[in-house]
Image 1 (cartoon, each protein chain N blue to C red):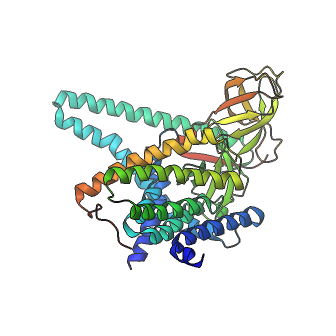
Image 2: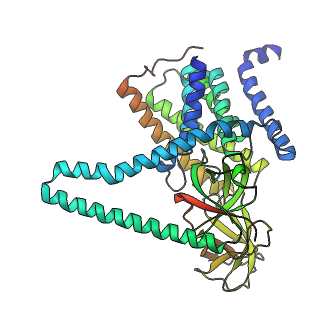
Image 3: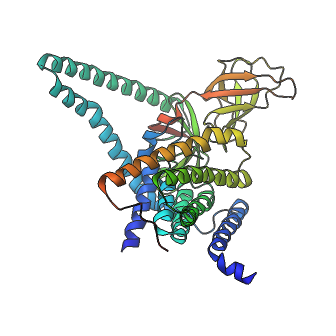
Length: 166
Length: 270
């Protein structure tokens, strides 16, 4: 039942990402809530959950675009896995460390998307893409990460400072 | 070696998934999506997208026309209230006038386009930041087909790249994968217009000797066999002539504000 509810939540979030989130776009870049979700799953539920759910979320994003299935599958699965993996390697996961990871993994998410698109679709100049998509997206995601973190703290949904156990 | 693999089995699973995803992408580029995964999520995502778009528009309208007034009414006295109300009325009339103007243009466009197919509403956009696509509320059952052109009252928007029974997807001209044959209205030079990673357009293959200036208007030439001839695309915003090379680098701003599309017209080839 929980899994079905979570699947529905992911579908709703993909739909929201393509509609409501458009109102928050700045110069064509909007925050990627699905990236933050993949990151969060890895962080709280461990690397294998992050890998699986991240991959699924990425697949939904790719199929929603309908051009090529794979770029987001690859990047979100990697992000989900690495957030869980890195958490296990860090002595204490503080808010700052978590946000630094979020920023770095957002850059990685962008770079992996860039590689897939470059290999399979069209050759894009890396520096232009980095400055116009990857970096602004990472900054925007981190800003949203802060807001989501604040909301978690405000409503005490769950004590996110507790390290996840595999 | 075996011990190393056992110790890092989780990392191996990640690499395996990445490897399989790359294999799958290679397969798709060569043979397309045989498993119908794209269609599956389209059918699941379109209804919530429609609902969310309608709700968002209603909430926006509510916030614009009522909440603003209610908030002011509490703060100010009756006279200020009256002024605000009048202001709002004027704004509303202006909105109605604007809408009327837009719809009139669309209507005249509809009448002038012999290959008019349908007027459609935008119900969603790409969830990521990598592709410039929109989802519209009509599809195969309304007569829409792949490669039909989407235009607005001010110019070309893009082309349909995917059609589902009740919805369709449009690849905008600003997407990096989009290209169309274009002609400069003043000089009659012809080139290929491509989308850029920054969400603008670039005109390619224009000779160094061509006298193109900032502000020149671009039209579709129809030579690509997809976009109809003579539709406005945009205006030249920057011309760069390099010392080496055969061609100029020309940036183009689309005449349609792609980020604020609400409704578009679908036309076929004349």
